[in-house]
Image (tube, rainbow, N blue to C red):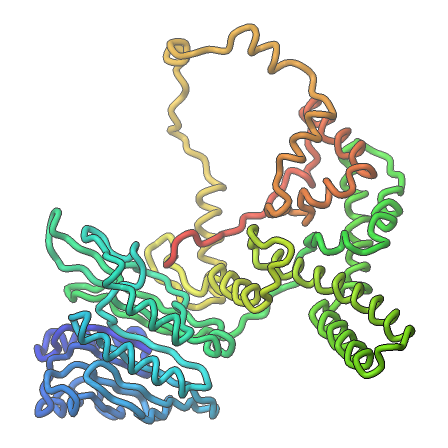
Length: 508
């Protein structure tokens, strides 16, 4: 799907550019905004751009040629339900029979006129009970960081934000350009804004989680074209081991760790440590399968069992047996519920979630948002070519990092000792401090300085595991660390890491 504010498409040159873009991106549903094509000229536009397609517009609501919608009948069945001067709202059916709702928007320039649009969207949201996607030019930024060189006032975005919150909408995952419009001015007069966007409701994100909009370069247009794609679900390989702190709540946890750690091995201190960690990994994997498998199902079952017992106790308040069973079941539910919340907050990577914050719906949304944001569906490779096939994306990364990390720079500039000598140098006191022996206390302090919620290493163990079982494993861990610090020898299995690409920008 494509939406694009073309700001007039009467000229043949613009029509050719739009046609070329449609063919290059294989779009089957197209929304052109601010076409400036009057109703009497719509037929000519149809023949030049959308011959053989289905076609509609909102010319009956505004004679200025604001929104044109076209689609290939073999791919979509579009049923316009509501139309105004600022939007066309449709029910769309796919070839496989699934349906969703879509709103194509070109908002008016003034804040007062946009109030009508926000009210219309809120009315539509109250009647929609399925997946809903909105795309277009909203002529208003949503957040204060979405405009450059021109200050954003809170009162100008408040109505838009209220509408988004009322309708339960959120931004779809996006890539390419963050700012979608610029005024083509120079110097201090140049303004960049994010006026075009794609919004989705909760049901859309559940049914089509692999949705992404890519904002591409605008050429000599004012607005960037937005290409919306729903990528197929990609099967991932076997997930590596990862330690979950919820396992520490199991009564037999310390006994399991102690038993697995007690096996003796021959070799260096570091080799022994690695082998013992492998034993613990196998033991904890079994614990997870036996005691924490399908933790959500177990939490729901515990909740239902508690509710049933409480209902029976209300019918028979004098029963000592029911009261005792209710007390035991209540304790079991609290343990299971705490483990479930711990599991969710760990997956959501929300460090601020503390005990008592049991908003599981919020945690589920955070997990889904994090997973979608971190998954890369399309990327520009090192040659400047846009890769939009998810199966080819890993190859683009591998090519780039093999070139970056696997090559040498033959013309590297050497350090000039004369320059170094002119700066501050290490004195005798510093030298003695640097050459002093390390201690177990320093190793423990370094471990305790690592936050328990930080990402684990390649072995899957975070600092929460080491801190919680330090009485059992502390001596072996300290011996391995001190052995490395004193000899400088590092086991190859330890000297490895995982390169994880984490999108830091909103549109990577």
